[in-house]
Length: 203
Image (tube, rainbow, N blue to C red; front, side):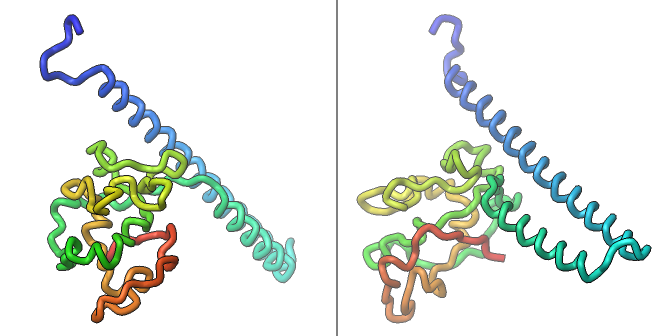
């Protein structure tokens, strides 16, 4: 391309970076709006409690109505879109990692952990290597077979091992009943025990 600098960033790379930044901004603004709404709801409840304290509202009736309203709010929140991001921890600086020979166990466990789902960190997003679900920002992306898109279809080895998220680095499958029915005797869990479920970062 005339005028392009040798070895410089290509237009497509720059456009992808701009789109990623824009999407992240929109997701963050959406989440801020949701948080603001929650704060407004809390203030409203506080106002009602003040009315109770002044004898203007029945406490018993208010508690009944408030509990019902909270249950309805939780139900609505569970169905709404949300932005999920893992804590800002440098994944390359963490050294206390499980000592598990995953490569030698793949024939038994079938890489079941790669069917679990979790949120990426901004560090992962900035690297632009690990892919996320566009409909569920920023959860790890899965293929149609239920496995992480980075789990190679034939070997199930991780295709982004060096860049893998912190959650993957810290995950310990040995006491996870979704992976092993009996770790000591290397008996895998039933094939349908995993599903697409949340994998949380080890504290």
